[in-house]
Image (tube, rainbow, N blue to C red; front, top):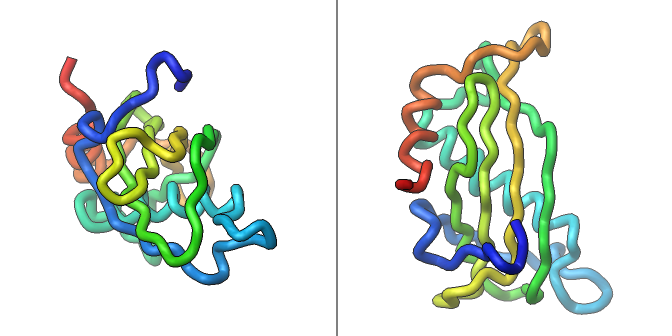
Length: 146
């Protein structure tokens, strides 16, 4: 994602409110950069579990992160609620690229945005496999209309 193509709130079909925690702040008084990736993980996996039926404990197929990126535009701090927007930028046979926007409450422009690529693998062998049907159906709902 670049500045020219920065998404706005309306571009994300799914949102999750994530409260910041005291421990998220660093010595500079704002949420540390590495914590943003945990917010990405949270909005993605909450959706996969609730809407796609992902079984993180005993499922035969899991998603592993192959790539991630975050562009920071504004900071968050404790106490603040982040509104995490989620959409699918690319849906392949074995992988998906999520696009995430982290918004201040009610803001139209993201304070941070990034992407996260999951490759779905068989848990036992870590061999890439096709995205399970229920998960694929849930992900298709997050693909923006052309």
